[in-house]
Image (cartoon, rainbow, N blue to C red; front, side, top):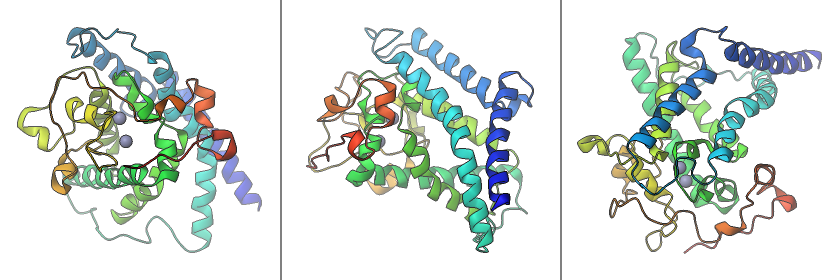
Length: 298
Ligand SMILES: [Zn+2]
Ligand SMILES: [Zn+2]
């Protein structure tokens, strides 16, 4: 029992310590997610200000500060709170004889690093695309994902407005992806993580960008805006589920971009029931406190 308690507290304080050191620039710059996130945000915000798609949209759009706070909450505060619990799970599985190396299907260790990174990026993106579909498909998952879809004016910071439960819901398949690929992240996985943050920020940014012919491969603001459309095509529970890559939507026929004015209504029917404040949003969908009425499906 004691080794569980020790592992929990070590992991918790380890995360606190790492975040604090990141803030103080005491970690290598290329894995400093705290300042990295701020830098990427400022760059993309600068692009929004310089090249706005919806020109009438304010630089400090609706819910700008709420979403800015979500960035730090989901990336740092939540990670610290959950780290001990994940450590306990890891130990529990290890005691059952299951480790992150139990499921290796692809041994990448002999491959050049850049191929490892691409495979890691593609596999992780696919499992997240699939998880995202589940979040839309099943009402008990959708009630949490509604927070992300409650954005009414789109800007880069909306990327990280999501219910903390989503961190947990995405975890099983992401972990499975890592296990299948050797049980650990490639040494330079930070490149993949920063790329995913930058593409995710761009997807939500007020910039008209579709990457030309690369739009069939890389997700973009024009495509993702339609993911947030208030009105969906008849009979669909969602379109354009892509995270970093758009290719899955084109391959599986879930792509939908009827026009690119950028002025469509955002949200979903019934979005007025989503609380406006952060603290009521983080308990939204949780039992009787959350008051999440089931979504009516077309
Ligand atoms: Zn969604
Ligand atoms: Zn989104």
